[in-house]
Image 1 (cartoon, rainbow, N blue to C red):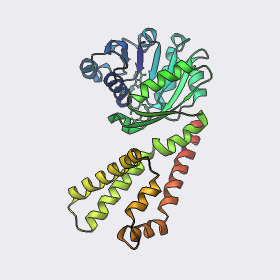
Image 2: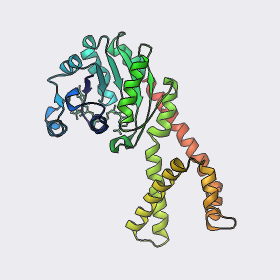
Image 3: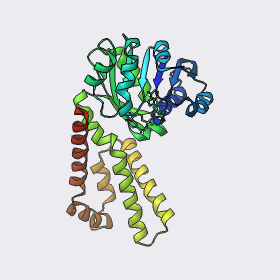
Image 4: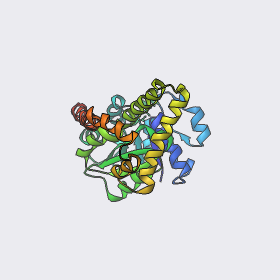
Length: 266
Ligand SMILES: NC(=O)c1ccc[n+]([C@@H]2O[C@H](COP(=O)([O-])OP(=O)(O)OC[C@H]3O[C@@H](n4cnc5c(N)ncnc54)[C@H](OP(=O)(O)O)[C@@H]3O)[C@@H](O)[C@H]2O)c1
């Protein structure tokens, strides 16, 4: 199967690299086009993939088309190639552009899938959720799974759940970056050298996340293992609870999800 990528930016190159590394397609099965070809040349050569002469040429040559442009560029680009999309699979990663709008721009005979990946996909550690449009099939879902599992984990959800996904895993990396920065700043405040504090903070978040996955234990159970009675960790947890860390994070997810819903009505 040939995959066509409309737009060859950060997310598209990450997906392509992931797909090639995972061996789920050959370089020759991928054709891309970018608004400015000159910025794509080096990576196209390095990856050994094909460059299409125009968006139309890419759509013509591919059975599955990945829309990898910014949300603001996406609908116009689809309208430009609408007549060639007939009967093809379109997978969009454009944040906040809902299936109705994609379907309207791409034509009613296009099989549409809308996906919400996140930034760690750029290093193969992404979390993606996707939803099927009315015409997309089970086989199309398998294709989407293949694409996104090449850069991390992937879940299928109803489209209405994609706003919550945006609030959790889409915006989530920013919450974690803020947490890591604060953790490191705490260490610096208590006298640690900055580089040491940042490395310790990063490794603590990394190791803890991995521990949840590898032990299969609930985070609350793992927290209890660290927090011995009358100890240092419980003293800290009292502060986190009193200052509402848990409620703050839950409210942040709610705020981002609601903002995603508002923007989606666009
Ligand atoms: N990066 C992430 O972590 C992330 C996470 C979740 C979702 N997404 C979604 O992924 C999409 C792409 O994001 P990105 O970070 O990869 O953006 P990006 O690096 O700016 O890539 C977009 C690419 O599309 C090209 N383009 C724009 N209009 C075009 C057209 N009409 N024909 C051909 N190419 C065109 C752009 O070219 P120019 O540079 O010349 O404009 C650019 O190379 C966005 O919709 C975003 O919402 C990204």
